[in-house]
Each structure stands twice: as C-alpha cells, then as structure tokens.
Amino acid sequence: MKLHIVHETRYRYDTPLTALVQSLRLTPSIFEGQRASDWNINVSGGIRGSAFRDGAGDWIEAWTVRGPVDEIVVSIDGQVETRDTAGVLRGHRETVNPLVYLRATPATALDGDLRGLAATASGEDGLALAHALAAAVGEAIRYRVGVTEVFTTAAEALALGEGVCQDHAHAMIACARAHGLPARYVSGYLHSNIDGEPHDAAHAWAEVHTGVLGWVGFDAANRCCPDDRYVRLGSGFDAHDAAPVRGMAFGTSAESLEVRVSVQEVEQ
Image (cartoon, rainbow, N blue to C red):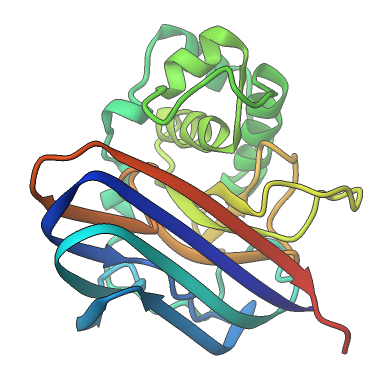
C-alpha cells in the first residue's frame, strides 16, 4: 500500500519565547514492512541541527527556533510504501538489548489489577502469550475518547475500563512485563480501522519481544497486529519517551496547540 501523510502541529504562545529547541522523531522506521519516499520535515523559522539514529533504530533530528517567537508550525509531507509483515519487525536495525524494555515507568507500573489481568492470559510460547495478552487488554479497556488524558497511567485506565490507544499500549506493556516479556511503546500512523472505517490517523501500539521471532507489534485497541495500514515512526518505554515531538522552550509562556493529521491511500 502507498500512503500519503500530511501531519501539521501548530504551537502558539501567549508571550513570545526567546528561543525553542525541539527533538523530532518523525521519520518512518526502516524495516521490511515500510519504505519512505519524498519525506519532508519542516519547522517554521527553524534551523535544522544534528541528526542521528539512536540505539533503538529511530531517526532523531534537532531543530532550533530563534526568538522572539509566538507561533511555530511543525509540518510533514511525504509518502510511505507499506506491506503486511503480520506485525513482525523484520529487518529493523537496532543495538539496544531487548531486556532493557523490562524497565517500568510511572505510566506502565504494575498494580494488583494489572497483575490480575496479566494472569488471565497464557500461551505455549511468547508469541501465543502476547496474542492472549492483547486480547485480554482489548476486552478489559473499551476504546473511548475523552475519558483519559496524556498523563493517565495503565493502572488508571484499567480501573476506568475505558481509554484510547495510548492506554491500551501502556496496559499491554505492563501485562507483558508481568510475564517477563520485554515490551515497548510505538508511535505512528494508521490509515483506517480493520473494517475500513476512518480512525484517528495518529496512532500508537505496543511491541513485544516474543523470543525467536523478535519484536512483534500488537494493537490491543483494534485487536490486531499492525499490517500495511500502519506506519511506524519510533519507540520508547512509554508515550512520553516515544513522543514524536519533544522540546525545550526558553521563556515563560502558556502554550496551546492544534494538530492536523491526514493519512490517505495513493492509487497505484
């Protein structure tokens, strides 16, 4: 599948900043399931700095905006060719030991209820167990927009019984870790739901290291593994660590933002 992606984030500040530095993880991953072409990143008024590929295989680049600045726009326009690898992250170069992803964060910390949910799943190997965990998380947390927020933890989302893709990913990571399976958060894009209905184009899911097969993606929110409708950007321990845009502002100001994301299939 060939997908055309337009992603625009507009930041506004009520008092002009003296400067702004951003770290962007907005370039599609390189692996057998996808290849980007004509991929353009721009920060209005920005100066592109250094760029590197980190140990997890993600491409990160720095941008600086000199003030005074009261508005910036981070924009992406590009195409990605994707194919279905049944969720397997094959051909992705990284140097970090998977065991690093047994580390807990506040967003993915285990409590008694998460441990109980994890205990309901079983499997003859890591892959079967991960599939069972994804099904359990999808059943326990109903997809619903507006009931959780950016700082909601996996435990809080499970207690609510509702949440969005971020909450499903955090809960999946916690439950996998309860079984000793390394797991991480993935940010990216999604063209549509499995039934073809429109979906929030910016998306998130979890990857679990299943053993011999390596990293495999699980989207508990949609109860499937990522296929050719998904575009992978980067990963981290949780949503904060894997955020596509992170930055530091110099100055005291209230920030507001608007996000527009479009993922459209291009006719072959």
